[in-house]
Length: 252
Ligand SMILES: *[C@@H]1O[C@H](CO)[C@@H](O)[C@H](O)[C@H]1NC(C)=O
Ligand SMILES: *[C@@H]1O[C@H](CO)[C@@H](O)[C@H](O)[C@H]1NC(C)=O
Image 1 (spheres, helix red, strand yellow):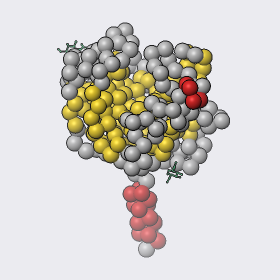
Image 2 (tube, helix red, strand yellow):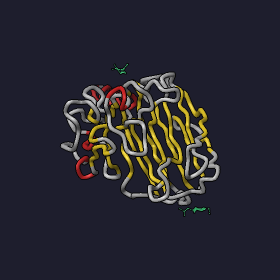
Image 3 (tube, rainbow, N blue to C red):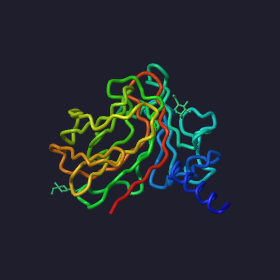
Image 4 (cartoon, rainbow, N blue to C red):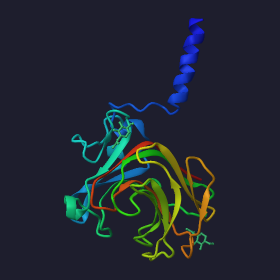
């Protein structure tokens, strides 16, 4: 009997906590494979944000900011937490030369870029957004970006708003500035969900919570070399906070 009770308890726990437990006493690099990613922070000098390379992020003793302002492990949930204090005007945060907005965001650098005509290019993320920014479309929680040698613009940006609306903006051309935005889901604020963004066989799609992949037009983009981004790219004036529970990227 005790053995049966034990097995029953184990199966209940596995149902409640299906993913590998996150260790709250490790930096994010102890819980997540950060080897593909470079971190960009909302700090640094004007036009030149601080960055951390994969070798600085990896492992339980990897980078986190000890004041728990931008990039750290959540003490309660063990999540990889990314926070942004607001806009340059409201908080004095730092942006890249090509952006008006601040971010705490991972950008893929291993590989540095990939061909959207290949058979698998997929980013799958589990997260909750306890504090979206106050802009209309909200915080950008995932992106595909065109290789910097071709354009400073994204292919697409996945937004999460303060009403829980998830929408995808897709640029129509490589020179950009003409993003078309459509709603792709709705999840209450501070609720765990997953998204998957794929750009493979020259088809862009997004899926929310493992649902049917919604195919999105890529207009005249024509599959330029691209890379993924995942994080908290604030579009408003007030702070934003995103908690990540898993981040996986696949290519073949
Ligand atoms: C992918 O295929 C399209 C259509 O054939 C082509 O225009 C584009 O240059 C290709 N992309 C890459 C990165 O080779
Ligand atoms: C989000 O949910 C978590 C877990 O339920 C809770 O501890 C936290 O206080 C919530 N955060 C906000 C900003 O509501």
